[in-house]
Length: 215
Image 1 (tube, rainbow, N blue to C red):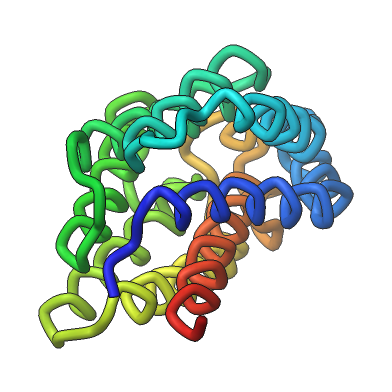
Image 2 (cartoon, rainbow, N blue to C red):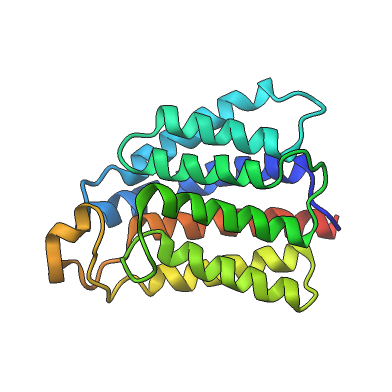
């Protein structure tokens, strides 16, 4: 079953919900190794995204919604998160431009383009204790699932699971990028908040795809 605009719209709504539900956790994680505003910023950004959904045309394509998310996050989210996540959604939109129904290959390309956009913007690599430590395992897992013949929902599920594992794997790392890098070894033992929010967003994507597949 391919995924269309209804999946993207429901993913956005589910993302806003899961970010709101985990807002305090994200604030706490960021307070430990950053400036403490990640949860508040992400919640504000996705609340703003929700407010724009009424403007989405009935014939909108997945890329149209992804682009709207990206531009809204960039304009409303402070700190590094707005430009990074905003760029991810914009690059994802570009990867699936003109496509009405996303098959497994398109889903993988969407995820890969989102990750590559973050790398382009933030210059982070795997092991730097950033959101890339969640995004890269997600992309690699999605790619392997696609090669194994997995469905779109299954691809997103393994990507979400890999992102969750990647977020957890940031805890023993020394940060090499962002504000956390100023802490040196004091950042060890703390999870990167951007990796955690990435995990939450990809879990939302997988949950919505699974629900649609079961309908």
